[in-house]
Image (cartoon, rainbow, N blue to C red; front, side, top):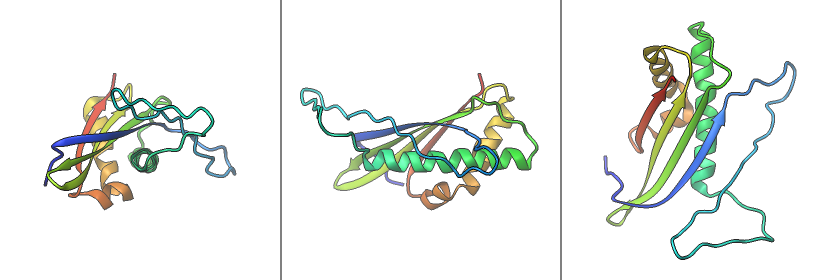
Length: 148
């Protein structure tokens, strides 16, 4: 697999696990965005509503699907998840020569669970998450699981 040699931009997301009340719809997406900075070329648009980048949208969709997959795997294994579970995903856009590439870095926080149990949940979730399956073998992926 070709790896990024020159990093151009990173889209970041932070996703928490929220259970919808019984009978409710799936809720809405609440995006908090920050403008990418290019040293010496910071841009501000005070009269324009911030728009997410493609990398932020992709990371947000992937993290939403992935954290749901963790919940499904935990339910199947009858493992109670803590209320403060979260997933941070950075999706990097970069180049290797003339080739444009993506890379994803996951930080999965499942406080209070034994490390081996949390890692098994995180890796099994990648097996069933449609975004993880769609990108398998095409995007460099790093997963860090934190239980403290």
